[in-house]
Image (cartoon, rainbow, N blue to C red; front, top):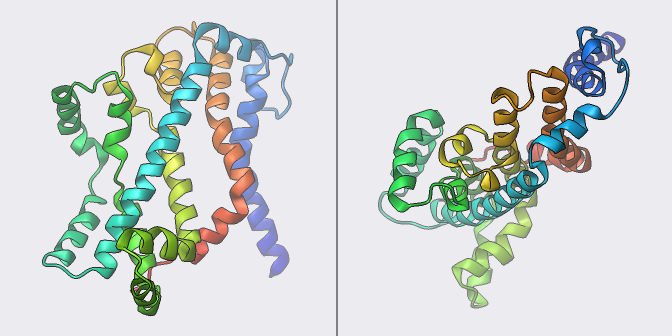
Length: 268
C-alpha cells in the first residue's frame, strides 16, 4: 500500500506544482514560445520582467503592500488577542451572543459588506489613503475565533497566578498567555498576511492614486488595463513577481506553518 500511496501523492504534488513551474518558464520565454507547455523556457530572456518594471512602479507598490500587510497583521493580532481573551476568560452579559455573532459574520461573503464599507470610507474621507486599506481589516473574525479557542484551552491556574502577582489583564494576555499559544499566533499571522497580500478587489475600489496602490492592484490594472499591450509573457511575469513574496515566505516558514495548523485545532 505504501508504494501506491507515494505514487498518488507524487501525482497530486506534480498536478499542483506544474502550473506554477510552467508560469515561471513562460515568463522567461519569448512571446512566440508561449504556445508550448514545456517546462523549459523557449528563447529564454528576462525581457518580460524588464518590461514590467519599465511600465509600472512595481517597487513602490511592493513597499505599499508590505506596509499594509505587516501593519494590518499586527493590528489583527492585537485586536484578536484582546477580544478572544474577553470571550474566553471574562464573564459578562451577552458574551455568548457576541461570540456566535462573530461566527455568523464568517459566513458572509466580503462582497456583501463592500458597498457599506466603501460608503464609510467616503464619509470619513479615507479614499486614496492607507487608512482605507488597513482599518476595515484590523479586526478579523477568524483570529478572534482561534484566539478564543486557544485561550480557553489554557489552565485557569495560569491566569490566577498572574493576578496574584499583580498582573493586569493586558499583561496577562501578552506576557503570560501569548507565549503559551505561539502555534496559534503563527497560524493567524501567516493566514492574515497571505490574505492581505493577495487582496485586490478592495484596493481597486478605494485607491485611485497610483502612488498608494498595492502590488496586487497594480498588477491587475497592468494586466487588464492595456499597459501590457496584449503581451501575455509580460502579464505572466507580473503574476510571478506578485506570487514570489508569498512563495519565499512559505519556503522559510513551511515547517512552522504545518506544525501550527496541526496543533491549533478547536477546543471546547
